[in-house]
Length: 159
Image (cartoon, rainbow, N blue to C red; front, side, top):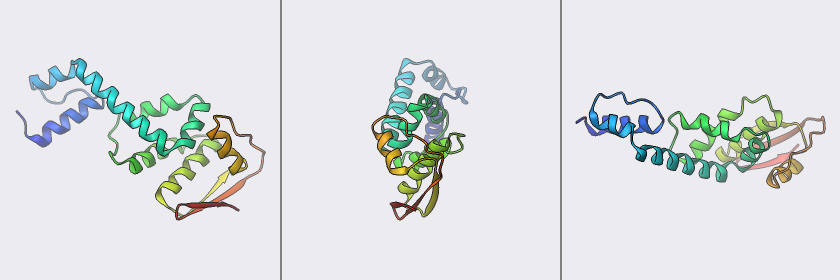
């Protein structure tokens, strides 16, 4: 049997969907087990629940764009933090490069709010009405103008 650290790394790899690196029979058996599928489902469900709570605006924007499941799948195949704030920021970093200007603005906004960072973010629509629309599950209307949101210390204002 391997040492504890190696054992934990091997199990974590299996949870992420990677093939067992060890030739030990135990890991080959775990790799084929129904229990591993249940554990993967549980981990993914908890991660999604935490992200829905930590990043509701980005989740809404992804849902409206039909890209939420794709974003969740991207997280499932790699190591992520167990700390919700760090996990949320990793998730937001993943969706920030999007060509969707609203999604990018919302993700940058939520990340700055989580981190308490000083950030200036351009929105493609009026931020207050966009936030309200997203929370209602509706698509915000872009008005063709740039709106600037200044985030500082966990607070924000529209300039």
